[in-house]
Length: 305
Image (tube, rainbow, N blue to C red; front, side, top):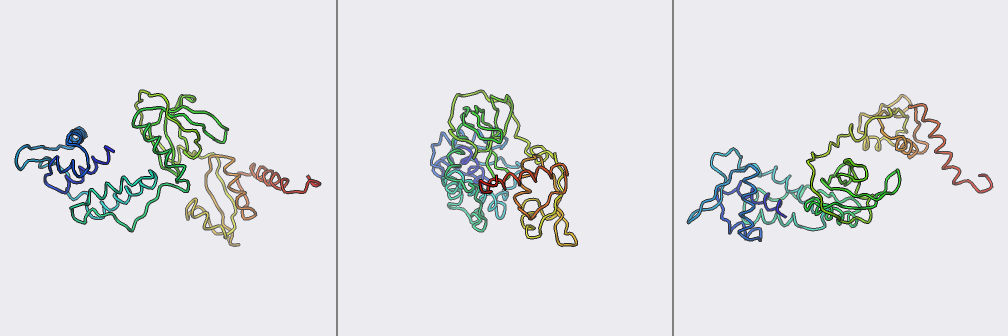
C-alpha cells in the first residue's frame, strides 16, 4: 500500500543522510517510477526532499529543515511499530510486519519492534470482521458506495452508504459514512452488517473526521443512582471507573453515572440480578419491576401463566 511505503521512505530518510531511488525500489519491491511518485507525494505533503543526480547523488531531506532525525528512534519508534503490528490483527495479513522488517533490515536496532507490547484490534469475531474491514477500506480508497443489511434496535433495513472512515472505538469497529436513506452522516457498527457489497462510485464530499466524544454520541438523558452489591465492585471499576461509587456503611456500593438510553439502563440494572437496586430515576423503578416480571413469566409452568 502506498501509505506503507511513504511511512517507510520517511523513516529511512530520517535515519540516513542520503539514499538512492534504486535502494528504495529494491527495499520496497517496486519500480523506480513508483518511488519517484512517492517522493513527489511526500514533497506535496510538506516534506522538502532534495534529489541529486550523478555519482554520489541520491534523495535526502533538505538541510536545515526542522525535523529531528532521532524522531523515530528508541521508545517512540517501538511504540509506533507495536501499533503497526496491531493493524495486522484486523487485516488478516502480515503486510505491516513486512513493512517493519524492511525498515529494520540493515539498520541499527533502534527501530526494532517492542515485543513486550501486544496489540490485537480484531475482537473475538476476526474471521467475520477482517473481510469487512478490507472491503470497506478498499471502497473508501476507490470512492465506491457500499450496500448492506443493517440490524439495529429499531429493526432491519437496507442501507446504501458513502464510506469515509473506519473507526475503532468503544472496543468495536464502525463505519462513518453518508447514508442515502437518512441523508446525513451515520455511524454503523460492522458486526451488525450482513450482505456487504460494493456498489456505484460517488463523488466524495468534503468531510471532517467524526466527533466521537462520549458527550456527543451518548448524551446524558438519565442520571442514575443505584445500590450495588460489593461482589460487583470489579464490574463498576471496569465499566465506569473507580470513582463511580461510594462505599456505604453497610458495605453496599452507591453507584452514580449518566445513561443516554432507557433500554440500556434497564438492561444494565437487571443484569446484576438481585445484586442491584435502582434508586433514581424513581419513575423507572416500576419499569425495572415489569421487566423482571416478564422474565419470570417465561419460566413459570403453563398452569401458572
